[in-house]
Amino acid sequence: MTKGLIVLALSYALSQFYRAFLPVLSPILKQDLGATPQDLATASGVWFLVFAAMQIPVGSALDRFGPRWTASILFALGGAGGALVFALAQTPAHIIWAMALLGIGCSPILMAAYYIFARQYPARLFATLATAMIGLGSLGNIAGASPLAWCVESFGWRPTLLALAAISLATALGIAALARDPERTPGPSRGSVIDLLKMPALWPIFAFMFVCYAPSAGLRGLWAGPYAAEVFGADTQIIGRVTLVMGLAMIAGSFAYGPMDRLLGTRKWVVVAGNALALAALIALALDPAASLVRSTVLLAVLGFGGAAYGMIIAHARAFFPPHLTGRGVTLMNLFGIGGVGVMQNATGPIYRMGTTPEQSFTLIFAAFAVLLAAGLLIYLTATDRTD
Image (cartoon, helix red, strand yellow):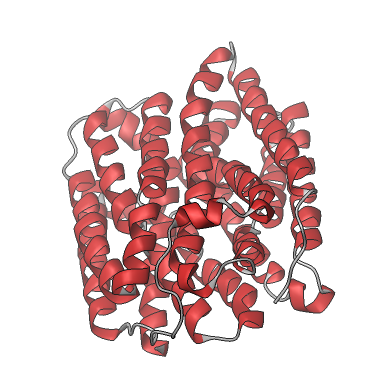
């Protein structure tokens, strides 16, 4: 099981990479393929929307067939296949299709690990294990920053993507060879997401999950690159450093959230405190987006740190799931979280075009994310706190 979790962590690092690597490539994709910020916003949004749409069938597959084959088959076809299509792209439309395939391939990875955590380990450890997996997987965020920029400048973006396709295929084969499905437990086996949607206690958590990841994922996965380039004149290397700092902050935040529910005896208020910090960073960015690159980088890092509650929020909801709906439950939460990012990625393209200057465009984007997060926090305040 340990070897299987290690290879799942590697594949999740690749998933994090694929959702976050477009900012570094944005200047060269514009030069080589004529890809505009709107094209890349659409491509990024498609990744998240396809990923979200896959969560229902993935949840059913986890409960019926287990994580081993669900994750390995989809990652081989979508992860390796999507990277290959990206490497061969000739137009922005090809980039969009490649991101759709990557969304399919990445869709089962984190949830396969969460399924194993929920079935194989004590419930009180779920939040720690879930956030640790995100923290380790977020090394893919790091790889998608300065290391990617170095590879692109040294070898070119097409050879780099071809190498990633080969790595993805090898990782998928590793899941098939090393992952092990948890033993089946006696009890009810029938049910669906409808049973979960009928539970009123989950709805405030669903609502907050829909908005909480959108600001940090949207900025780290797309807008940080155009923001640094258009407002501060940053080149590929500087963009890589900015996104590296934000990625490191997101890793630190994931590990910081991990043990907090056991130390403080609450999940809800840990999530509220961290996301209030993220909201403050968004408001500061919206009020003066062009103050300085250093200030903006620090605020993006604060946002990434405070907004890293993804695993803790899933742990909060998991405490309400019946055991036989574990797979469907965690993937339903993932649907809300990733779906919210996809919706906002598509919405921020038109918001960006509303501005008459880069500073105004990014003021509007930061403000939109701030309003969204504030509304979600207000709803989440009505949630029932629960630990295991």
